[in-house]
Image (tube, rainbow, N blue to C red):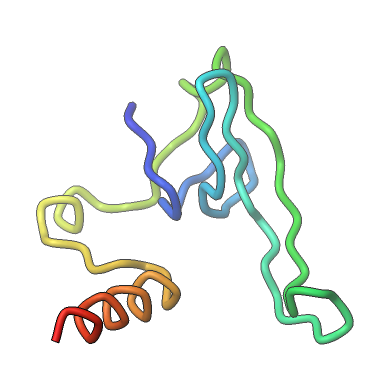
Length: 89
């Protein structure tokens, strides 16, 4: 299975999204809530899944959604795209 950043997945009973991919492991963020007391304004918690267990990860994206063109799932990516378009003008 090929993984992408921000892809919704399920690992055993944990549901979340992929927030880091390396050749040896990936991390799945399962808690991501606003928290004004932290430096970045969010409270996040992730688990590490090593490559030998990747076969146990299931994608939460339906096959129909995979076939459609998927817009960026992150508002940061959308804002950056607007910045690049505006810079070219």
